[in-house]
Length: 109
Image (tube, rainbow, N blue to C red; front, side, top):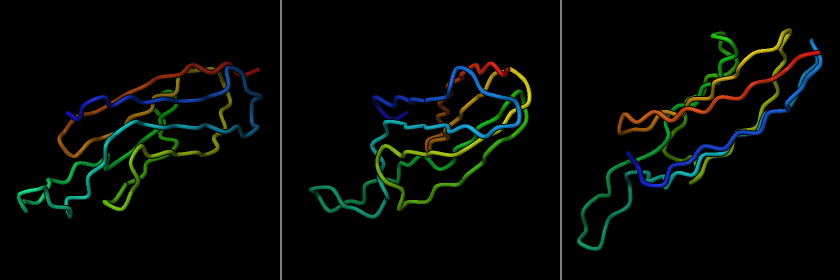
């Protein structure tokens, strides 16, 4: 598990049924591509967030694969649309097998 990994998510507290709204996510993670060398000339092992998903009440909203060129502290912004109130679950998957999850409730009027 990488040190000091911290997910942050911004979802509006309320939304209108059938209208798109913006979701913003950021995860603090010291990404390492696996291509750099340390002071002794040894390769530093790859350590990246390699996948991000967002589900709403068990239904997938977005599922993206991240490659080694992804920046440190990856930021993802996307739009979603829901028809009813519920919980959004955001999940980040790390190369070392760690999984980081954040949930946010949204109320639909």
